[in-house]
Length: 368
Ligand code: V47
Image 1: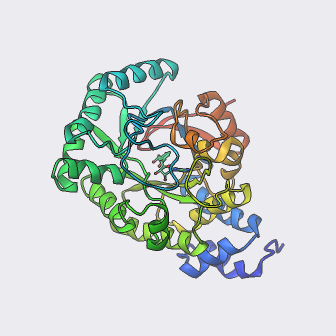
Image 2: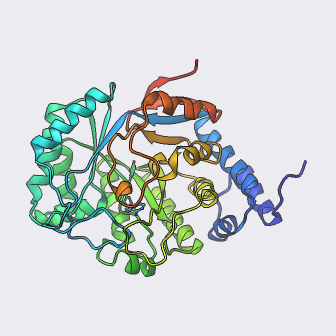
């Protein structure tokens, strides 16, 4: 039975079936094709080869210690200048208080995701102290904190190298690094959407340094703004090359751009078709990543659920508080109870697995 409607996909399908690596041109052909069934079928095949019928979630919370940021990223609706209306900064005591409440709300909480702004007055020790104090009070909670951009900033605040900074963060209790700050690696696009940010090369170097020190990290790609399909494929292939070197990336997370209150001209929400295709093509190109995450906060729970049949094997967690997407016009909310995550995964035909941050299995939910 020949179900491939776009015949340009036939040689790509053969490569996937034979377990061969896809090229830049293959990636471009996939993005240009609308044969979503074939692309999704192949991506699901790869996903099931890697993870069987399992799809992962965790019980986590996000805490954003400050939105005060000296950054100038044009896609970011969250950042505020010091003194601007709506600007805030939490004390370590307030962060701990939030975490106490969130822990009560989320029994079995295993992860806190901490990212925020580049605060003009916070020093090296302030950033370290957050991790240290959280870990002191909650030794069983994994601290996934600080994007590559923040790690560069923290290192500069302390006149330390990236390696020294990461070692100090590890000593303070850092467990792993989230994927934020990847955006799009293409220099031309970066210049237009985040001219003052670390380059794609620096992002990769910081992650590779972390990997060499034994930390795991995630990688992201912000899509659906001004980038081209070429830029997306370039981004994915640069990630694949970095992963060939260190193997330290756990999960790839395509982040769907949200346009409200941003400074991106003619900005629009992404569409369901593009979101699903981007998940699937990512799964196909990133043959050396174990996991692809459909982050429900940005995709909405319906697309995130569908994505589980199109190459994703993770849907992220309970989240509870999320500020970055909310500021840019999120339509998905900030909290999904564990019971609902289990249902979303199960009804997508996968077996829900509750994991910790490092993908150790906490519970497999085989029975209804
Ligand atoms: O770095 C900023 C993105 C990222 C917008 O590692 C926007 O497990 C869409 O990286 N529209 C932070 N996206 C979020 C992030 C993340 C989230 C969940 C899990 C993990 C993980 C990482 O959010 C930023 C930026 O790329 N972002 N503004 C916007 N308007």
